[in-house]
Amino acid sequence: MNFDGQPILIEFRPQLRASRGKLVSGGDCGSPVHAGSFLRERRIVLDRALLRSPAERDRILVHELFHFVWWRSGRKMRAAYEALIAAECDAGKSGEMAWSAEWRRNDLISGDREGRTRRWREYLCESFCDTAAAYALGIESHPEITLGPGARRRRHQWMAANLDLDRLRI
Ligand SMILES: [Zn+2]
Image (tube, rainbow, N blue to C red; front, side, top):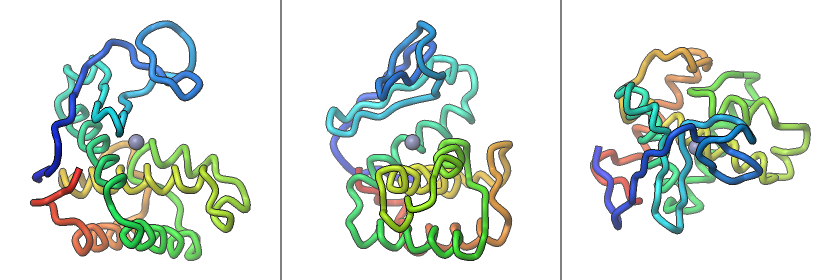
């Protein structure tokens, strides 16, 4: 896996939480999160607890790096990923490749997809990042994976056709 672009600062902070759209360290507002990315600042903040679990740290860090890939990717690639997910929804498939996309998928309400609302677009982005991270790291099983094998195979094929792991623009 090779990321190609300007440097991104990676910081570790204790007890990360998301509160009212902001990333905070410590306290008891909002809910605990593993990480957050600041695309324009080119900065990723990871929870310090991840230092103790290298596999989880890699999974979360690569997910965050794919936020930069999604941000840089053109309309065509985003539309192609949206079509993949829309086909899954039409086929009645449920489940995701990690919790980040899963909870956003569960939060969708009727009309989000048709209206391409912010909730739908954020879900697509998280789904892309979770799926791409699992693909890039070769993660085949994880407690957060709830997507069935058929849909998983199609996502894998989509990633293989659309991502060049040797040259990921960030
Ligand atoms: Zn994310």
